[in-house]
Image 1 (tube, helix red, strand yellow):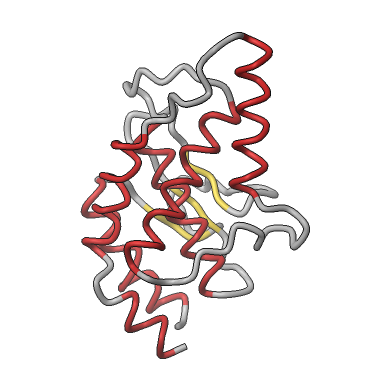
Image 2 (tube, one colour):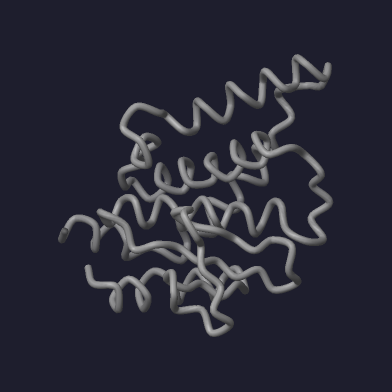
Length: 166
């Protein structure tokens, strides 16, 4: 799948469903880039643009995109979420994992670094911080994560077909 096809078949329906502009790195009209990150969601803005890198594989690109959509829906301005970094990362990565499961497409938690399972890393660090602060480690918003993942899947009915053509 080319960048143009990905933009039209993956970005466009997600942008419409979630009301967020989505760009590849270097294509945002205001010049924003994702720096050294694979993706970034500017959640502190009223309109929360997502910028992602075109990565080594189709799997890596949509995994990052689903993760960033999780951030815009769970942690953005007006969300009321005041949790720490590992909580936010665990929730966003959970959105990616559940969306991939619903769509029956590969989820690769280690794609950023072959030695690190990111969802386990975020959850382990989050639980450790809960222990340190005496808070409940089971307060991830599973129902909301699932609803967001379902919305992603609803816009990506063709993604399974597209993936199998790769």
